[in-house]
Amino acid sequence: MMKGFTTKAVRYGENTCPVTGALTTPIYQTTTYAFETVQELRDVLEKKSEGFVYTRAGSPTQKVFEEKVAALENGESAISFASGMAAVSAAVLAVAKKGDHVITNNAVYGSTYHLFAEMLPGFGIEVSMIDVSNTRELEEHLKDNTKLIFYETPANPTMNLIDIKKISKYHPLSMVDNTYMTPYLQNPLDLGADVVIHSATKYICGHGDALGGIIVSNAEFIQRVRPILRDFGAALSPFNAWLLIRGIKTLSLRMDRHCENAQKIAEFLQKHPAVKEVYYPGLKNHPQHNLANKQMRGFGGMIAFEMNSYNDAETFINSLELCTLAVSLGDMKTLVQHPGTMTHAVVPGEKREKIGITDRLIRISVGIEDVEDLLSDLKQALDKIESSRTT
Image 1 (spheres, rainbow, N blue to C red):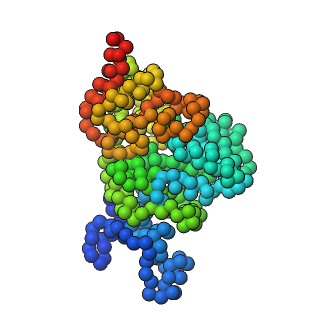
Image 2 (cartoon, rainbow, N blue to C red):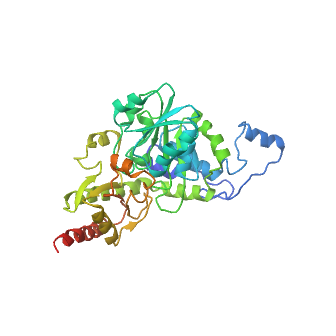
């Protein structure tokens, strides 16, 4: 019965409460669950019957959220975490052990970079950070003990795209962070990827008020991850799970507006003399525009663009009146940030420059406000740069 994306987002996994008739999934704000007998408890622990034991391992509210996202990503199963980075870390550790080799794209979120560059080598895991979109370079780094290829597409913050179908043909497990696109705009599992990850804090939540992360894959892989959730303890709270369920119901509506606004803003930025370069896959001159059309159903709400100097970038950000200077993305409000000193400050400067995260680069998470207001704010900030050159 449920074929459409928004129908599934609103209704999948949710039933009217048989006890109270509550239409909305309740917040099961409890840490533990009671049983009548020891055998009843054992049956749940041994998966002979359904039930919940301790919220660190799951709750009815978390289950609804997991089932909903799995359905939207066309996956068999899902498991949720307290944050996006908890989900990324757990997914990687479910695959790689001491003596293994993993590959990640060189342009990823700052904390993801630190996980691969600093944390995993400390566990005895060899890491190659390369341009995954370059298949020749990828093939040169593949080894017999390579267990994983991890990447974001589009990459944060460079907006570089990676061909999911092409990368998924290689033998290591293919893991895609789909936070930028959401299940509404891109489904990596349908293109051959093995695992999909979201920082649900971002677009899935959409309201900037709840942290969360989720992994979607086949049932076997999700079972491999469960002990990591149990032992590391990065459990999604029932209240945050409820907030994420609320957020995902309007995901398609919000993403349509994010995309519409971002396209208009990208086109405006491209024409302004104070802007050196704009990176948005919806622009026809984006080098991977054709790939975007092939594997995405929209171009998203994220834009990166370069100014002519760091001073120009700083002046622009400081001059904004409506857009907000803040890390994170996917909020209904437009957020602007400087990756080099904020989200990607952990990446050494020389490496940032090499992968295109220059000190001149600015990232915009375009919100759902009236685009005329956003354009007016961006224009007055950019015009200040131009006027300062003529005075």
